Image (tube, rainbow, N blue to C red):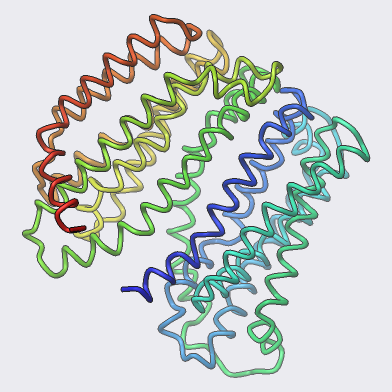
Length: 473
């Protein structure tokens, strides 16, 4: 157990250090760039993320899936096959982007800038290399090196943003230049830290156990699912760019950067929870009380966290500076993103247990359509607030669909009546907080909701807490 814990910590400390660096960088960025400039820069990042998913074509997931099935001496061939596919797709993407570079540039930046398009393609290439470089280190279970890469990623970006600000001033280009320099640096670093996996590529002619065709057959459906899931996550920003302006988008991105810091809770919990849940189910599938307790603990913690963030959104907003005061009004609904995702990690396990993962695609498509429609209807009326409201509602629906479908496959007696009651209460409190700044009434509402949550959870939580305390004794 101690070995497993040490291994888990070696992989996770990089995320936590990166979280601290990102937290420090966010208020610096919002004081260096105005909302309009930040909005433009965010479109570069968005394009990079989407093109990366397309270029990888799911081969990164195929690499992970087949890694331990491959002969240890031939794993470098698996890396070579993955890279060949990705680089071939990258070449096609590059040609297409280059042909339509003017249209792409105007769509992303609102102006024609061939220099930025070239930087996008360069950054994409090194992003692909970094993706496989970091995966190779991760699959070799070199946790310390993996965390080092994550820290280097955030630290180089942090340093370059400040350095470039003093060189070129308050221009959106500083974020783009820093992103490119960061990915070039960490991709080369990933190769230096794992030289054997890369240098051996040119010396062997032996075939890998898994062909490129097999990797494509496995990876392509995953790429489609990932792309749809990504569209669900970015449709709000795309809609803001098209239906509002870069200033509204910049405010939204700033608020999102604060809320995104909470995603480390969801990802860290998922890393811990999934193997534990799978092991419990395989050993004793009838042990549904375990999942019920886990749901009670997680939902209680996340609801309290959501309430605290909504109640303190104006104080959190002060971190962003005067130019971004409007970003605070977007946080109440954006907080539903990490909250609903984290709670649903417990309730969705029925889909995983029964290996019906294609149902996740239906969930993603449904929520994508709802979010898209909500953005189209609300953004023209209330701008960035409309995007936040629509996204919050979509993630609530995301939780409901995951839970409903999973319950049909693996029934657990979760206290969903209480859960949905608290979600409804938090929804209306978020709605109030979206249009009204902090006041004594806001605080009183928060206190009342807090008491309701504490009283409602006292019956199921007290026995769980007593059990945990007795185990420590």
